[in-house]
Amino acid sequence: MTTDTHRIAAATSGTRIATGLFALVLGAFFVWGAGFAHSAALHDTAHDVRHAFGFPCH
Image 1 (cartoon, rainbow, N blue to C red):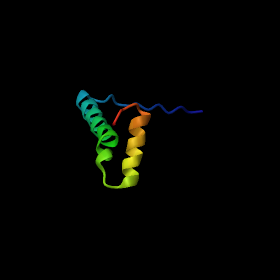
Image 2 (tube, one colour):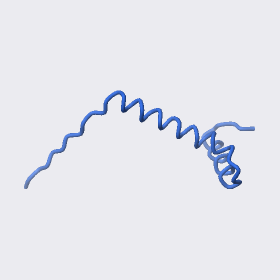
Image 3 (tube, rainbow, N blue to C red):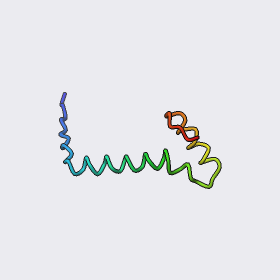
Image 4 (cartoon, rainbow, N blue to C red):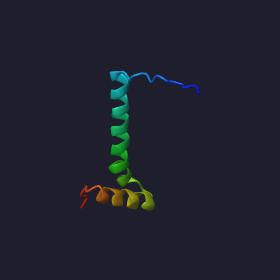
Protein backbone atom coordinates (compact mmCIF):
# COMPACT_ATOMS: atom_id res chain seq x y z
CA MET A 1 0.00 0.00 0.00
CA THR A 2 1.38 3.39 -0.93
CA THR A 3 0.49 6.63 0.71
CA ASP A 4 0.48 9.88 -1.20
CA THR A 5 1.15 13.00 0.78
CA HIS A 6 0.31 16.40 -0.56
CA ARG A 7 1.49 19.73 0.68
CA ILE A 8 -0.81 22.69 0.68
CA ALA A 9 0.97 26.01 0.43
CA ALA A 10 0.00 28.59 3.02
CA ALA A 11 -1.81 31.60 1.62
CA THR A 12 0.06 34.88 1.82
CA SER A 13 -1.43 37.75 3.77
CA GLY A 14 -2.06 39.64 0.52
CA THR A 15 -4.07 36.74 -0.86
CA ARG A 16 -6.05 36.46 2.36
CA ILE A 17 -6.87 40.17 2.35
CA ALA A 18 -7.91 40.13 -1.31
CA THR A 19 -10.11 37.09 -0.76
CA GLY A 20 -11.71 38.63 2.32
CA LEU A 21 -12.43 41.91 0.54
CA PHE A 22 -13.93 40.08 -2.42
CA ALA A 23 -16.20 38.07 -0.11
CA LEU A 24 -17.21 41.23 1.74
CA VAL A 25 -18.11 43.11 -1.44
CA LEU A 26 -19.98 40.14 -2.91
CA GLY A 27 -21.90 39.61 0.33
CA ALA A 28 -22.77 43.30 0.56
CA PHE A 29 -24.14 43.18 -2.97
CA PHE A 30 -26.26 40.12 -2.21
CA VAL A 31 -27.70 41.62 0.97
CA TRP A 32 -28.09 45.29 0.04
CA GLY A 33 -27.39 45.75 -3.66
CA ALA A 34 -29.95 43.29 -4.95
CA GLY A 35 -32.63 45.14 -3.02
CA PHE A 36 -32.46 47.92 -5.62
CA ALA A 37 -32.94 45.56 -8.57
CA HIS A 38 -35.79 46.25 -10.99
CA SER A 39 -36.79 42.62 -11.24
CA ALA A 40 -39.61 41.98 -8.76
CA ALA A 41 -38.55 38.38 -8.14
CA LEU A 42 -34.94 39.37 -7.42
CA HIS A 43 -36.04 42.22 -5.17
CA ASP A 44 -38.47 40.02 -3.23
CA THR A 45 -35.82 37.33 -2.77
CA ALA A 46 -33.29 39.84 -1.48
CA HIS A 47 -35.95 41.30 0.82
CA ASP A 48 -36.73 37.88 2.30
CA VAL A 49 -33.02 37.10 2.76
CA ARG A 50 -32.48 40.40 4.57
CA HIS A 51 -35.32 39.55 6.95
CA ALA A 52 -33.99 36.00 7.41
CA PHE A 53 -30.61 37.42 8.48
CA GLY A 54 -32.27 39.92 10.80
CA PHE A 55 -31.62 43.10 8.79
CA PRO A 56 -34.54 45.49 9.20
CA CYS A 57 -35.52 47.27 6.02
CA HIS A 58 -38.77 49.02 6.89
